[in-house]
Every structure is written in structure tokens, then in C-alpha cells.
Length: 296
Image (tube, rainbow, N blue to C red; front, side):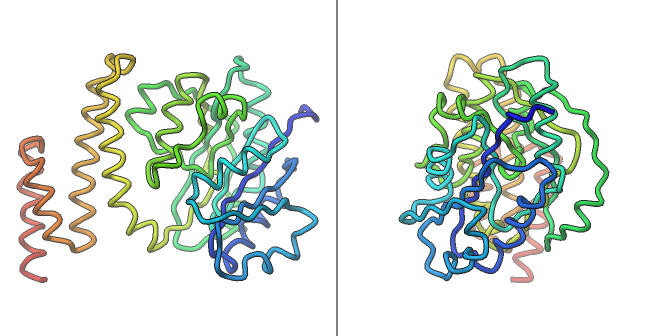
């Protein structure tokens, strides 16, 4: 393995003094060592800075005014010193061989124009480092072309390593977006470089109430983003894939509103898109809706 391959790890952090320890420990325990670990404190009001004192020899700590995860990640990339950047959220963890496997991809892939290396992942109710490390590792990988990414745009940010050069070329994260900003970035990066997915589960992402409640905005932003793609000439060959994903997002949003017990919002959104929903699904969704109305 190349000894001069350098990867900076960037962790945006906000009011996570009790959660960040497991994330940091999973980075420090990597079998392939990160060249630096950058914590970007996005205006926390808790004792995060104090909680990081035991790690001060291992991290670069940056504090900024609150601006959201995208601005924190962009600032971390700006201050990084490596040609590759990896992102981890403060409540998620990595398999101990995560960076090792992805570094292997960088070295062995036939193209030198890689923009993203990602991996499989799993949402969990509680992160467990020992259980994750017991997962068997598969060094195989596959190239994700633009059509695959448009059809299944669910690369999780804590799984990715990105070329800093190409990240800067496409302008980094769009700080005006607060959800679906990762998808916006990936769709720009797949145009300028190769996207590679490792066929192993290398990351556990904590499922939280916050992630559930923000899902509504994620669907809206994703639908809006895909509608905007339909207006661009370079995406014309993929219009059927884009339209299918818009429909899938619309249906997923309806299911989400039922799950979150929000019949009024369900009814309003259903009326706006009912002409686009397959007949076979309409009856199932409406049955669940009326059952929900009877209970609430």
C-alpha cells in the first residue's frame, strides 16, 4: 500500500458532547491512519469543546458560527491538507478497516480520475463498534455510473471519501440546501469523475428522532432537485429514470406522512399528485389514510 496516500477526516459537530467520543474513537482505531482529523464545531452551545480536550493531540479543532452541516464540511475541506477527504457525522462510526479498504480502491482502480469512493452502510438504533468490526470485509467494488446514481441516489455521507481537487472544482456542498445537499454534490461529482462503491458495510449510521423529523424536507428537496435536472440538456437521456425517482420520492413521502401520523398533510400532498400515482397503490394508501383518520 502506498505510504504517501493521505486522507483527512472531517467531522461536523453540533451539540454532541455525549456522542462524539464513539465517532472519534472509531477514526483513531483505523488500521489505515488518517493524516488528520478535523472537528468543525458548528456553533455548539453545549460543552463540546471541553469534551474534546482528551483528544487535543489528535485533532484540529475549528469553531464557527452556526451555519449548518454543509458550511461546516466546506470549512473543514478548506482547512484540510490532504488530497482526499472523508466525512463522518458525530454520532456515526466506521468499521476499523474502512479507510484501509477505500485506500485499496484508490490504488487499484484502473482510472486515476476517481471523484467518490463510498460503501454499503446500515442505519442502527445504537452504534456498536465491536459488532461492526465483526462484519466480514469484501474488497470487491463496482463503478456507479450516472444512471445508477440517479436511480438509487442513497450514498450516505459518512461512507464517502472524495477527491479534494474535484470537490473544489464542483464548488463543494451547496450551503443554501439543508437537506439533499449530499445528493446535489454527488450528482455534480459523477459528471467530473468516477464514483466507486465498495461492496461491504463499513459504516453504521445512528437513526435518531431528528433524522426522522427532517425526512419530510429531504423528500421535498429531492423532488425539487430532480425536477430541476429534467430541465437540463445533459440529463435528457436519463429523463425516464429521473421521472421514476420523482414518483418513488412522492410515494415515499406519502408513506412517511402516514408513519408520522400526519393525515392532514398526507391529504394535502395526495391531492396535489394523485394523478401521478399508480392505481394499484392509490387504494392501499387511501385505506391506510382512512384508518389513520379513524384512530386520530
